[in-house]
Length: 374
Image 1 (cartoon, rainbow, N blue to C red):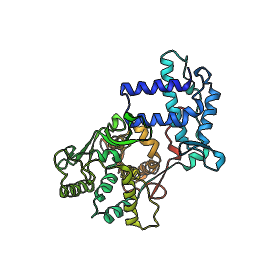
Image 2 (image 1 turned 90 degrees about the horizontal axis):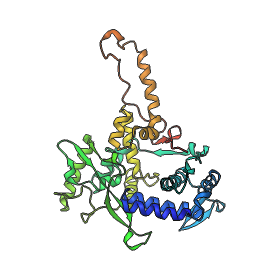
Image 3 (image 1 turned 30 degrees about the vertical axis):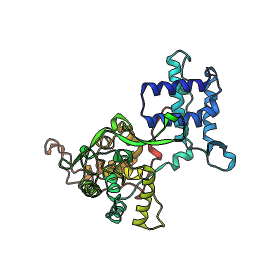
Image 4 (image 1 turned 120 degrees about the vertical axis):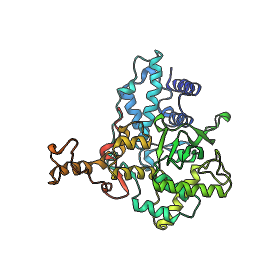
């Protein structure tokens, strides 16, 4: 059996079993078509040695997609990122796991072929966030515009854009100040016509089971929803099961056009010389604000819908470094109660007004990249 034959069987099995979300299946198919098939498609499963897989990683890293055709690094383009190569490795590993379970391979060779992070990637991997002042500037500059409440809501709840666009009023409790997140909207491939490039907006499950959660609302986020309800009621699509953030027709808004609108919202706040950031930066900003207030990683993971606390620490863990120093420093405070001062006397808490380390708008992940086998 060759690799491409295994890939077809594996992807068809996922499609029949409905084991993954449509968008996840789309990403698996894309990785197979563009990263795995061009380099390993004709290889026999028995020929997949550790050395061959390591060469495969390098082939993927030094390739680029140009309108559907591959171009080598020789054309002056930079190599693909470690994250992209890792995604291809994860997909190949999953397919070969099925081969092992069916007795077509004695063991999965991908587990032995480790994927190392280039030193240059460790230095440049960063997540961009807004400072609290920048977030407020965006809110004020767009307060009278239809999508203004959405930017504020995302920045003060940490919802993914697809989760916010799928939100309906019946899942919003303004009195209890909570929202229920249990689905997401996004683009998926149109499978009925067999065209790999045609997509459509579709409602589906959240990114992971852990992403299904109830999110508490701050006063700012609550006020944004109150304003949004007034706006959608004014255009006649704000009652019953109506969407919280619909487009002008009362249906799901496309995230592509929203990216352009968010860039315009930033330029409205900061001018045309501003380097615009993506919508997902609002989610990272919310997490950084919670960390600045000393919120525990487990609580942040639950609010953000992360699969585990480890995911939270892999992304934002280094922001806690200064806080741990401050917490220990409280033991040197003469006003701290002694152990005999009473049960639970632990002294004053760590300062809760600390801002993220380094520049206000950049979170460096070099020390806390997620550790994935290989």
